Length: 462
Length: 73
Image: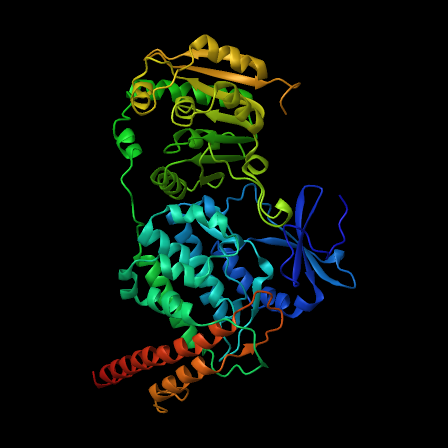
């Protein structure tokens, strides 16, 4: 599809300083002439280098030869192989992004700049770090200017984090219903009384919520803003608060108990790892999607052979464990996100094109569903045929799936709370054979589980 | 205060700004900005700025005392 370079795109329409344009599968950022001064300062002052060296800003290549009358320059940022959205982040991922935003602002201040916006949608997570992807977000800051993104920071970062901290991590997912941030008065209403005792909540949420934002006379006075020193203090106070909220309110759930009981025999796990690794080595997928990734063991195996691995997990604690693994082992190609496979993330935002659905973003050469099918069939209540269709819609080529039969102890635990009929091994095979071609089948020598390597049939479900 | 390099706001001014914040809602135009910073939010920042005056002043006093102390040593 041809684009008029600076014309708004459904995924890039807010900022007049630059446009993101996708051409032949590659994303470019077109910098307009009215942003030239800021862009030049960002690049020549050393700010860009410092941020990129610290892993806080996405690096890019400047394609000066593509400049034109209206376009100052075109930059080609490092291409992001997967972007998870804030409503798919765990609490710790939210905190990482907020702290990165404040750190970038602090550093930018020393170069006389500041971020003109503060939205978590401007960040992506890689290698256990939050990285800013909006290169055209920097503007000049002079002493006694206001922090122009202050309200946005409170609505889109501080508010959701405070809600998760005081009221539970589900608030992270609920931000899907407010893509441009939750209003401060609403956030203030949801927070408990004890949040009034926290200075950041009291000032930046509760009292800030009382400030009425009404259109009125235009004045250009800026004498009431911050000196650089004060703004640095403000960033540091906000960072301290967010750092001190090291956990979010946890509700007791039966899954925690389930995982405690989930002590599989080491022989079973060792054999499973060996089988999966052998298969991945053989099929050499470029991309892997690990559904129900648990603590990320198999995502990590996938990361040794594939360029990109997406680890999708329902449990917040597991997502944090994978994040920790990624950080400790410096794994750059595993992307972790929270997700509920029975409530998949649809296309959202303007024209339904601003944020892509999980199917568009996560479709991979290989999909793995290990120790997962019984969760989808029993508590997920997904019929076998639809489960097959679900897998088929996420894979380009291969599927590795583990069959767990009705006698398995985990199936029995799940059936205690949801007594449903459970498919026999033959039904399982029959259903998968409709959309997939069985390449290899292997039975576990430690229990009744078995593993399948399937290839999608080219005709039929896409 | 001036000796400490501080000449912007003091506590009385904070109160004046707070009054100003309550009664006078203004809209400040910023070039290149595309998000609405919110007129109330901008004025609220004046209040925050006032509060930070105390913090920055306190930090400077501590730094000054430490400086004197280290000189004597």
